[in-house]
Structure formats: structure tokens, C-alpha cells
Image (cartoon, rainbow, N blue to C red):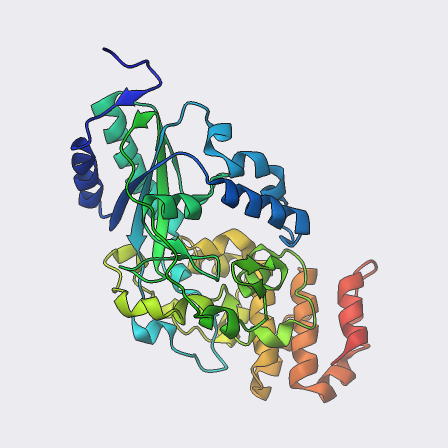
Length: 379
């Protein structure tokens, strides 16, 4: 009997052919789940939305219904093929950096993983479609799909207390991509939680962003503050950021399951030397062309120069290096008010005497309320 067009059945053994093709493309994990979200996951999502602790990420609330259930996004979908790509760093890559350098999250020290994975997913999804006739849709963290719960249902790993995925094979270091399809495949066994009583990820957070296991106040998360947050970083949180200028790996790096982690094989994820311990003074001097050239293939380019230099200047203010006061002073007349405001704060921290001398000389423009507030607040 021929299955209906939206329900293409494939023998269980063909899963291995699918798995083999995906591994040939470089994927480290290939597993299958029903394209559905567990009720408790949907409840947790709606609870998070109700608390309104997602900051500037209004797109989460706007797409909550579709995010909660893949079948709302695509009613005909049957299977989620979950794919993982290892980006495990070496021990040196997560070691502390000197105060006059910036710390960039491991995942952003080379090419944008979205581009790398999407290229592989297109090849994979095209092969699925050609060989089965099934419809496919592919996603890499860019659509309202709850990929971590789906990955847990597929047995890729489980969501740790820090809300990130943890794998028994790769620890904390897996990028995820998924192909949703009308192809009906036997699901793999789901993974269970193996965190036990451990709470290292919760306790290490520099800003205290976790309000409990599996509960994150995004507005306090360093990754949110340095990437998603569009305005000035709240004054009480700035000293807690240290020299983290894009993202944060603290809760990932401390996980005991990383004893099973492996170094990444994908060349596009190998850290570029200039992004491993970049000098804050050099970064603060970047104009728009220099910023775009340095981060041409990096996810950092997406936040733009102004937000990035804001982060750099916060790190300069936290450095305790008086010599960096000049780098802050040079940004007091920057074209971006976000940059100017962060420069004022950094200067007030590193050289209060110079800050006082310059108060009148660098009067804010009319309507430049945020910068005016920084000058008024001082240290």
C-alpha cells in the first residue's frame, strides 16, 4: 500500500544510510526523534515567557506558539533529524586571559557556525529529498524550533541545569542543526538527565543569572548582555563582566562531563590567533571598516561595531590598567552614543582625575541623555 504524500515511510535500516551520509559530511552526531515537543517542555517555555525575563529578545514571545510545537510551525512534519557538530576547545582555549586582553566565547573565534552548518545541512537535506521524495526544512538556531529539547528526545544529550545541552560523548561543546521532514523514521531512544546533585554551572556564573536549576534570567546573562542587549549594560553588572567582550563560556567549561570532550575537527572552528587573546587597546581603536574586516566571517559582525566596542570599553574599565585610559579617552567623541557612554564609564574607573578634568570639555550633545547620565554618575 502506498503511503499518503505527507507520510513517506522508510525501513528502519535506511536510518543507517542516512546516518552514514551525514557523518560523511562531517557531522559528529546524527539521531532521530518524533517532531513533537513534550508537554512539560511547552509548559516551561510558557512559564519563561510569562516571567518576561528575556530582555530585548522579544522575538521569543512573538513566536512562542510555533516554538512550543513543531507541528504548529509545519503541520505535516513527522521526524526531526538532529545533527551535532563538535566544536570542543583545547584546555588552553578556555584558560583565563590577561586583563589587557579580551575574552571571546570559544564558538566565535573563527567562522560563524550558522554558515558552516547550514552549508552541510543543505547538502544533507537535498540528499534526503532526492532519495526519498520527502519534504524537508532545515534550521540552525534561526527559527522558532526548540532544538535542545528535540535533541534530548533524539538522545543527543540533555539540558543541563545551565539550560545548555550536555553530551556524554562531547560534553558541553556541540553545535546543533536539524532537518524536519515528512519522512517517517523510527526514533532513537531519548537521553535522560545525568547532572545529579552537581551545581557547578550555577555557582560559577559571574552575574548570578541563574534563579534556579534550569532557570535563567537572560537579562543578567553575560552572553545576553554582550550580544543581544542593544543599549548600555546596567551599571551594577558592568564590573562583573571582567574582560569578557563577546559571550561567556564559564558555565559550559566547568561541567564535569567535559572530561569526555574532544577537540574540534572542523577547520572553520579552529581559533584564529587574532581572536584568541586580542589586545583591548587595538579593538577599541577599530573604525567601522576595520571592524568589518576583522570579523568578516565571524558571528561577532552581526552585533555591529557599536555594541562590540561598548563591550570592549567595559572590559577596559574593568582592567585596572591605567595605561588603557587613553584608549577610553579616544572614544569619548565616537559617533555612537553607546560607545561614548561606555568610554565615559571606563575613563571614570581608570583615571578619576582625568575624568574630572574632562567633564566640561566633552559635554554631551543635546538629547544625548545616556551619555549625559554617565558623565553625571562618574564612578
